[in-house]
Image 1 (cartoon, helix red, strand yellow):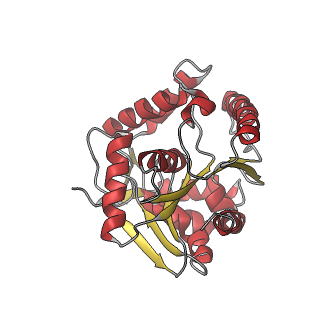
Image 2 (cartoon, one colour):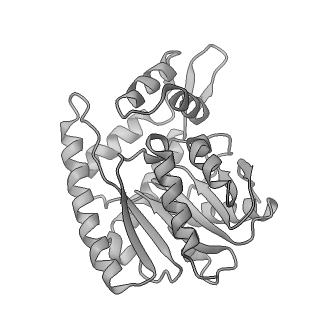
Image 3 (cartoon, rainbow, N blue to C red):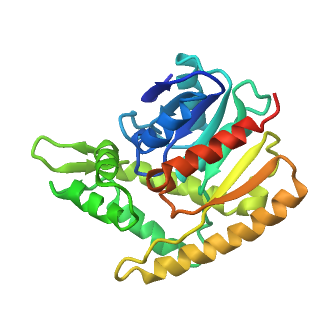
Amino acid sequence: MTFLHAHDYGGDGPQLVLLHGYARSLTDWDSSAALLAAGHRVLAVDLPGHGRSPGISPWSIPSVVGHIADTLDAHGVPEAVVVGHSLGGLVAVEYARANPDRARARAAVNLDGFWWGREYPGAERVSELLVASAGTIAPPEYIEEQVSNSARLGIPADRAEAAARAAARLLPDGRWQTLPARAETLEILDELHRLGALGVTAWLDGIGCPLLLVQAGRRPPPAPGMEWFGEFSARLARGVSDELAALCSIRPTISVNRIDATHPMILETPEAVATLVAEFVRGLPD
């Protein structure tokens, strides 16, 4: 049995479990969690191989879901609304799939956690970038670089710095070990491509609990030399949006929304994220 690193934000009310994105940590949730704890019991979890959680091998969705369940049991969180961002959003949906009787998952929220199959145009190029940056040793200036990149999205420096530090591991010589490790990244990508190849409609088939599916409403300004990625992400967002519109018209348990933010919305607009999640939970059946 593997217990994952978790942070209990306290609070009283409906139980919320918060999951972060790839190469991030639960610290990304600090601002939103503080707001949500005013009316909810809030627990955030570091996914395996991220933050302060141990790595696992193989890194597979069923294993991750099982470790999350064990961790929630240890913290006395038996029935939760599982809220995930990016990779965490996909895991939140799969957690709901694995727990269809509400004994563990009352509902799920997926914040911009959508992927693509290996054959999707540009997918190989994105995978190469992720693998190249996985588990590397970064220079001491790494945190300052992350803060500078975040400033382009309007993320406050103190919030960006805390999140960047929590998502990497400081080495004795002042350099930084980025997470997750390369071997885990390869396994994570395999899982993501497996789910993404289904397409959104087929992926969500068979999940009966209420789902809130949220897309980022804005694309980030392209970094120099990365204009191709802007086109890639815009094309994916349009395809996902079309599928979600069709789904919510025929499946009453699925709600769809957008947030006026780019992909790292929980750092960029934590107040809007907290408001959207709280309104969704308030509308759930008893």
